Every structure is written in C-alpha cells, then in structure tokens.
Amino acid sequence: MSYDSYYDYDAVLGGVFFLIIVVALVLGLIAYIVSALIYFMASKTNGFGDVAYIAWIPIINVYSLFLLTANGADHKTVRATAKKYTLIYIGLLIVSFIPIIGFISTLCTTVFMFYFTYRLFYRWSGEKGKAVLYIILSFVTGGLFFFIYGLMRMNRPFVA
Image (cartoon, rainbow, N blue to C red; front, side, top):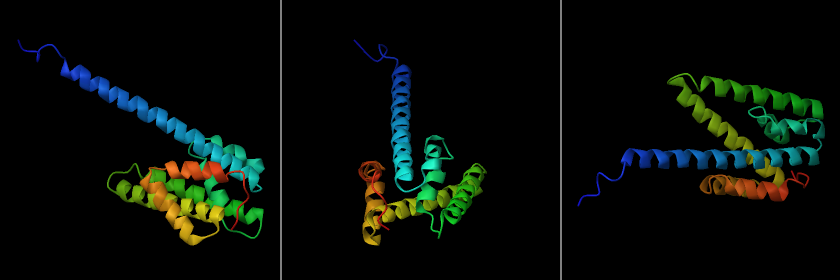
C-alpha cells in the first residue's frame, strides 16, 4: 500500500509557507512596537518630548533615532541635522527600488542605520568600545540585544 497519493504535498508546502509568513509578520509587528516604545521613551527622557510621538509613525520614526543621535549646540541645530539625515534616509529608501542601483542603495541604507544605532549605543553607554560590542551583539542576535538594552536604558538620560 502506497501513502504517496494520500498527502497533497503542495497543500502542506503552502501551509508551511503561510505559517512562516504569519510568524514573520507577528515578529515584525512586535519588533516595530518595541522599537517605537524605545524611541518614544528615550525622546521624552532626553528633552525631545514635543516630537516623541513621531516614534510611532512608520518610516518617519527614524527621525526619532536621528534626533537622539544628532550633534549640535542647541535644539534647533540638532533638529535640523536630524531632518537632514531623515531626508537622506528616505532618499536612499526610494532609490533602493531602482534595479541595479537599488542594491547599492540598500547596502548604503544598512550601513547608515548601523552607524546611527552605534551612535545611540554610544550615547547610552558613553564608551566607543562598548558601543561597537553592542552593535556586534545586536547583529549576532538579530536585533534582540538592541531591544533588551534599549528597554533597560530608555528611561535614563544619555551619558555622552
């Protein structure tokens, strides 16, 4: 007796694929909510409470990251720098949809975000070596370290 005809392998494969998509979407939503919470609370803690709500708006929420990591003598300079970086990020994001050039743009966007995540870790820890270590740990753990460390530090003012 053969059981090969009993199972519909296409349906099983489709079900597994659907399950993978659902799990990825749920994990992505959880990651978005946690990162928005981290940016929101860190913005409020470090003097940017008036624009902290931006952390909850998709795509534009990177402004919160750039605002937290920008250098400047006063709030006006910091906000102008953060807006400039946000426009650069959105430009890279738009260019990433163009074939061939999009691959290079995606790599640039990835490096751009790693650099500003490094700057955020540096602002939290105050040490360059620790910030590099935290970036490596975040990369190795698939971002889990960023979420854990960010949740621990979001209510504390920056050290650097």
